[in-house]
Length: 111
Image (cartoon, rainbow, N blue to C red; front, side, top):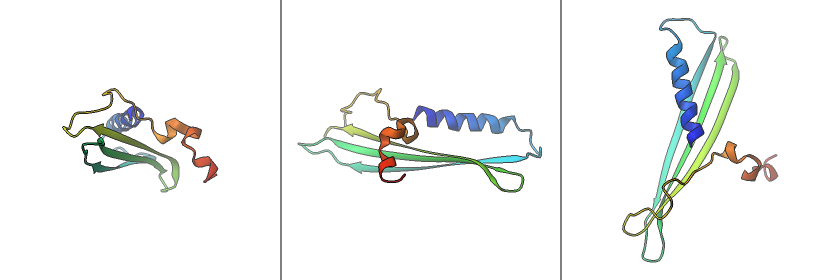
């Protein structure tokens, strides 16, 4: 999640460095899609909110040809008890799929 936040901030800072009205040879677009899926807690089971963030940054040249594309995704399951109190450490980290790399396990089914 920290890398995703850093990526967004870097892209925003880079965009701020381009003077208004200046012609650029490349353009970069950024998109992020966030979904949240809740599951209520019960007497016997913690509840959770699954947050999934997928981000993509695409750079195109002056001819509209894609010169670079980065896509990453983070899934964070936030667990809580029936009273709404968190049941996991507040400092829990949630690595992105790119951070996990080979450990993600998709290579075996989608080489």
